[in-house]
Image 1 (spheres, rainbow, N blue to C red):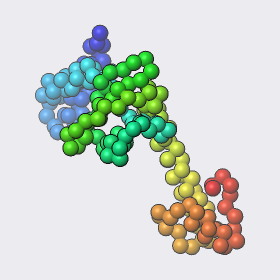
Image 2: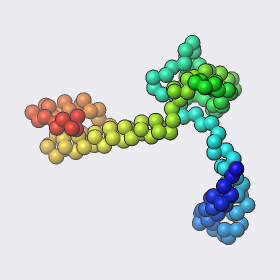
Image 3: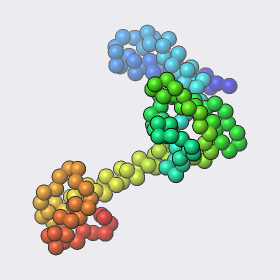
Length: 167
């Protein structure tokens, strides 16, 4: 059963955004925004493939097939599923498709992607703090895309030791 109140609320929100962006009357955008809201409500539980977890590699795949499964696909559809596994159909840019069985535990979730992004952002922040510390202590020749080992070597060359929390 659909929650019609939330569908109408989201439709009005989309219509207001259309009015703000393109001008005119909110009512003029209501028809299309209702179509968008109904489509979103009908397809909110559809299968979304977020990739595999890093520890999983499908067995018996050639190089091209492995490249397809690891990001060279146009679309991924769920063909069938059991209690513990899912059969996925990977469709390539060239038009051929590949069906692969994968355990459900190997499928990445939104939370996994968010955790990976958070780890990456923390690493960038830590590197920026290390560079700032080095610059404050007189290390010369620091560049934007310099590797961490090079920054540490430059720090050590001056006889300094970087704080452990920055390494």
